[in-house]
Image (cartoon, rainbow, N blue to C red; front, side):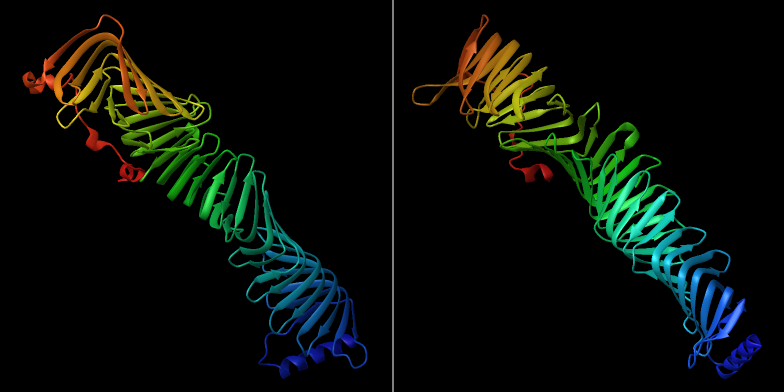
Length: 493
């Protein structure tokens, strides 16, 4: 009888509110009684189920406010919308007029793509958007995502996480304060300061995304990757895990904190299988010494790390350091051995001296230049005056440094020298040419101090008035002082 009365009341409510939203419909209840005196709800208990639009709600018991189109349900709450969305909890307040469900007590939401668990959730069944402000946990395959509060749009499959967000995977962990996650495309979007930790490195960005299906990722806004010893940063970092290929674009810095090396540029590519990094577009290499920095530019830098641990520079290589400068077309730098080799028309300028050779090798020790080797066809030249040049050549040359200052040069094999001779009044009186197998040149305060001819030297001096143009130069002499860079900015032009 009470159930018939309930139905009549429900029909009257529907007729009197014909223009309101669809009413909550009771599908089943083992027991149905009026609420307390002066209350406006019915008490339903025992396998209770309701329907509203395309949503089915089940519970142990409920209070049904028919006039207000509202329901409060208790115990073993189960909500099913359509074929894919389901929710569970212990208490439900459902507002039928605005399609809002307030679910609490061990809440569990699941669709085809993900599972959400939290203590309280507000779900707009019309807009298909869920909100939670207590700690929530998302399970999606191997991913676990937690946050203090969040939003989930079940239509777009987009989660919005806020406050103390953490993502845990078998390969990495993310810590951030704001993050989006699309459970259908499996894409994570970083929307604020974010740290991504893995066994090999740490990634930081303030904007970016990562897709766990395609293994594609992009990191922007103050983005960097570091393994503790090396750091890569740029305006935008892109990585394809499947191909082992990475790219950094604009304002790039590759920082080796162990060897004090920084490479800057506007385009860098990483080839994981080859353990190789290439830097192009405005590429600049910085090798930081205790008291100075060596700057180098080239069209392309290629770095091999791991066991190889060396760097190559290609095309239009230029070097600037306060105490020497250089140019070549190809360069090899062994980081582990502290050796720099210059190839293809190399030239160095040390103070007022110009040194050319078919190849130049620089050996460093304790972050300082120790020796330079020149072979074959080395030639040293310096300007004697506006018309003459002092010159020394041989088969091999070795330059010795102390505290980054040139102290001595040894010439071994086929040594020749050409020097302008002056009288006591500093007037030019002749040009001396000497031939000697081995020659030693001592330097003092970056100037030539004395020369020692060691093995059977022969020497001739030609008076100044008898000198013809061909007498002024040793073989292969070319004066290139106008190419000497005078600053870091010169090599970057």
